[in-house]
Image 1 (cartoon, rainbow, N blue to C red):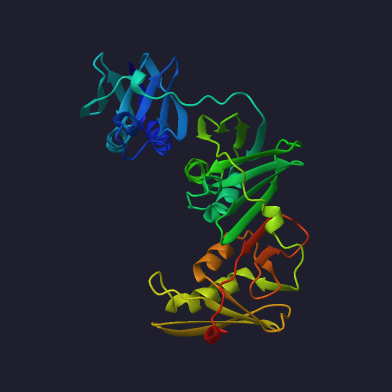
Image 2 (spheres, rainbow, N blue to C red; image 1 turned 120 degrees about the vertical axis):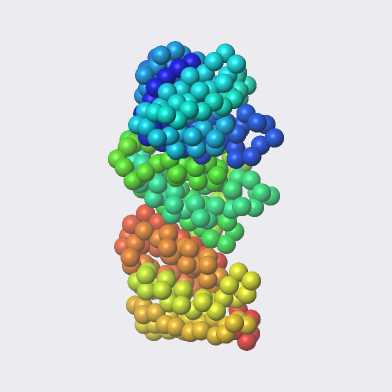
Length: 372
């Protein structure tokens, strides 16, 4: 195998595929990338047996073939190569010679037959959505994906396509995050599947804020995301996802309007006296036109206020500061509706209009007698 390729394009392809290569594995080949030279392009694959990424890059092919090269080593060599182009040749013993201007390397590779085959996603239902929008939806929900392996299905996010819209839902037992947006192809049938959170993390790294359309194809056991010259394939998580619709209160006693950034700033100021080692709840009291917040720990005490529209009859609630701030930072709106009922029922964060583009829910922390 031998080819010449523009360094920058090759490096970008290596970085993309490396997101799916195992960082450390007892199986050496999983730490590598499969490099395959075809007629006019190079195909680069990374696969850790859970998530696979395949991308292609144009190259001048002098002879076809394949080799598996250590992802970290190969990427570092190409990154530091001095020229605009690199030449790579692989001999029958799978030794790769990499040269650029006066720099030259020889590294030992593995046969392509040693590399595991990536899953093939059978032609199935396909939905389409813009990459920039999908990236936002993932970032605005994935923080609430559970890391509790005792319920594997909830270590992923639920994707639901129906009525021309895509809904993504994540729950971790303390928070619920929901985002809903129209689909490019107006998919009208009901479609539901769960994508592992780890796969979504990798997907968010390879999609950008550009205008490419992402095609999401549902297979019998796997899900495939295709965008441009790149494809990510992941296993689907099986099992019954939480019936989130039943967990969302159908009505609320209080509907309050607040500026998101002002609320975040007040919460961050109060939470200065809290830390990972010294934990405690944020005490919030919802009075007429104002939210009074306070926190206390061995480090000291803090209090602050945030203006709001509405009155909740001085309702008092406790919140985990990091959970609440993380939720608020994910909300795609400047002004939000806080919907509350009692000190022990969930706090819901919704749009101030009638749109249903997002819904966040956070469970309160019970306040002890001396905290209320």
